[in-house]
Each structure stands twice: as structure tokens, then as C-alpha cells.
Image 1 (spheres, rainbow, N blue to C red):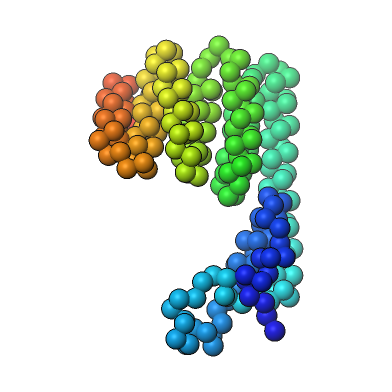
Image 2 (cartoon, rainbow, N blue to C red):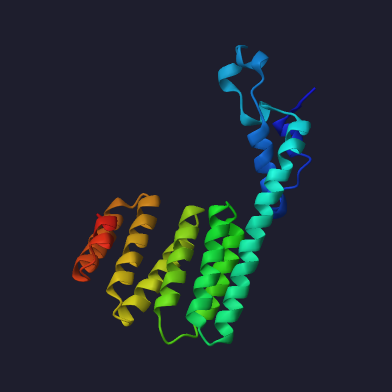
Length: 217
């Protein structure tokens, strides 16, 4: 007989390396037709779905291949960053680390993404050009906002805004204001959000940037 998803989950430790396997378990599960037509049918949780280990085994090579490709991209990003640093182009190394973090974020690994972004931030802080650091702070703010760490998100955006204003980077300052508006919205502070969005709109318009202006609007 098949297992319930809740049974199977107990056998798969909740660690980053097994996240794809846990996702495969969910993707391989199916409804129990007997339960669907029972009185409890409308109230069934995901844990009550059925999973067949043989079905997971059949689809596992596909998952492993996808994970190998993902690791190859991450390792490639490291090599790209090392080569950029070797030729003295630290800004390009920061971009490579950011791209790796973005891949992890898209893959649903916010903790891993944060590690890449933190490495990029440490590298960017030594640059005289502040734009790479502003890009990293924006990514960190967005990540923390996504996972519900509003105070941390606000700190990154506030720091980015201060740096952008000091560097007279009007467009990046507009991005930081937009991020702070999003944090205020998430916290239910609608008046504060409106103020931040209005400030970001003014900065975007002053910068003559129609894309940023539309985004803030």
C-alpha cells in the first residue's frame, strides 16, 4: 500500500541537501479517491495525500540531473568570481556572486541565497564605486522581505538609501524607497508606505527613468 505524505516526511530530514527530494515527494503524491468522496474530503490536508516510493524512484534521475546542473552553475559562478578577482575586477566578482545567490533564491533556498549575498556584500564594501554594494543591499532587502524578516529588510534598504544619497545615485535611492514602502505595506503601515512610495516616485522622475517610475507607480 502507498504511504501518506505525512508518514513519508518523517523519514526525510529537513535539510537543505534533501529539499529537492521533499519537493519530489509532494510532486509525486496523489489524492486518495476513497477519502475524496468521504465526508472528510473537503478538509483533507496535503499530509493525507498518497505517495508511492516506486514513483519517486522512477522520477529521481530527473531530479538528480537538475541538481547536478544547479551545482554546476554555482561552481561556475565561483570560478567566474575568482577569475574576475584575479584580473582586479572586483565589481564583476560581486555580480557573479549575486547571480549565484539569485539562483539559490529562485530554487527556494533563502538561507543559501543569503550566504551568497553576504559574501557579495563583504566584497563590495571595499569598492570605491558604491553601485555594486547598492545592488547587493537591494537583493538582501528583497530576500528578507520575502521571508518575513521585516526589520532586517528595512535595515538593508535604509543603508542602501543612505549610500545612494551620498553617492548621488538617484535611481538606486528610488529603489531603496520602493523597498521601504514594500516593508511598510507588509507591516500594515499604509501611510508610511505611501510616503516612501511618493518619495521613490519623485526620485525616479527626477532621474528621468520611466521604468523605475512605472515600477513605483
